[in-house]
Image (cartoon, rainbow, N blue to C red; front, side):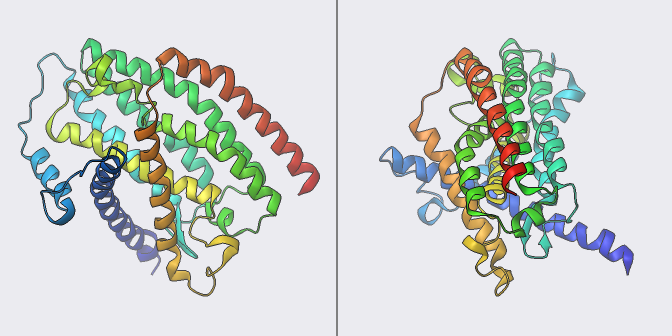
Length: 329
């Protein structure tokens, strides 16, 4: 029946996906703490359950039972809506990410690229509104930093996505994964990947670009007045954003659910979600490796790098990509 295909099946897929993402978020915190401990020659979580595997459950229980306090000086409606506005985009962007051959996360729409571009920037508005509504100087500074940072990195990020679109020639992410590519297209994409990854670090407010929430300068930035489950929602948004952007990078640069050279996509299509999950885990390792290895730059250094170095490179890359597409495709 049409209503089952249009309503019931996408709803079930969405609920399953949300449960998987929430579980993934919980154990990403464990994964990060364990990896950082290894980088620092420490043990990491090792008390709650074997190898600390129940630590995310303990953290969740603690966050739920924390006392909920709403300061009297905040703009209450916006203050309460901001955490949800930060979290929801990280979830709904998954609607167009293909998990396997003939198996999109929710729906295979022909405008997947546009959906990513439209939704990706919304998360920053949750951060900005949280800082403004908190009516706190540290929070406001964090919000201002987030807005300036967003304007700076989203321009080169958009130019890089346009370059990928020129190579793909299609707005559908499913077609992007399944369409054959020449060897030079892969090499040209991988040249862009480190620069794209820098933009993604800024997009997700991850170290070394976690300037909107720097502890040593702004206490906790836009999160200063948040506690309990509201703080947990911001925490959740950051980590689910890491998973989401890793899935996007795996789809755009590394073949998504397909093995190299398309091996297995036809013979064993059920492997697709597991292949994509493996690529996501590797990319998440890069996030954590960067956090363990690099110090935080000054804010003016980030802005100067974005406008004077990253933006011209992104423009040049897009122009060269357009020329390559015209003459070699």
